[in-house]
Length: 296
Image 1: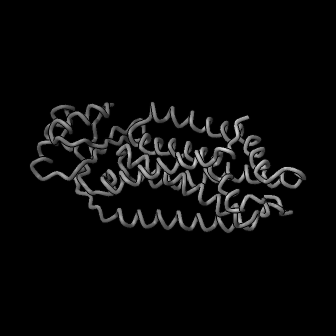
Image 2: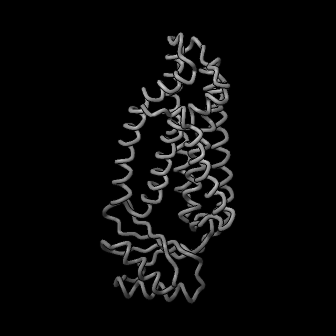
Image 3: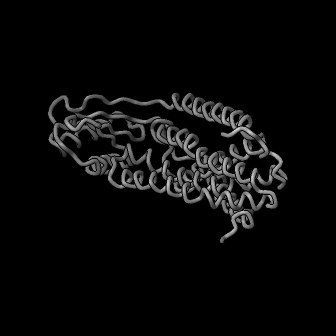
């Protein structure tokens, strides 16, 4: 049986390498920001009939030279399209509107609105997201400290931070646009990733009660393997659904789903290879913080 506890420094080194590369990319090039954060032009159209997002993108690219994000209505009987791209001047807007009318034979009044979006809202969104992450982390730390002890609680928080940093590294390395969906995915993963970690921690505590001769390291190893199948199966069922959405979903859905896929993989990795070894290190390898009578 492959020993995770024996090789955990290698797994942590791999995570550290990915995070460091992400930080270097972030410091060197920054994030690629969507209109939600960077500001730009937003145009709403009533297409009047079914349309292909790729065709609208091609027209926008041909006229303006900029890539655009195109969102569609969730109502099957509503043929509205929302185009978001870099801020355009008056002349560029006029040329784009004329090109869209000609290409898709739009009726008079089909262009519902054209407006400039300012980036001022981004600072408030980022502040609220960071505040939410901080509050969630503190509450998780308090809860796990009460049900377990401070060492496993801190280990769980470090595992969560690991998942968040991996997601940020993905955006920095692959130059994926940061928008409101990124914030939503980030907060979703925080709640999702902690579940598998708690299951493993609870198994460690149960095994420790009945392990008279095992070392804490051996107990951690056994507990990880006992819960690993459950952790992987849970993540796979989630990933299958997300992958289907990523393949067949619209751009709006895909922008939310892809960071979720990265987050689920990172959360599964951290639950198996980071959280328990981190508890082991914080506890000094002794297992003194698992002798609790209460069950989580």
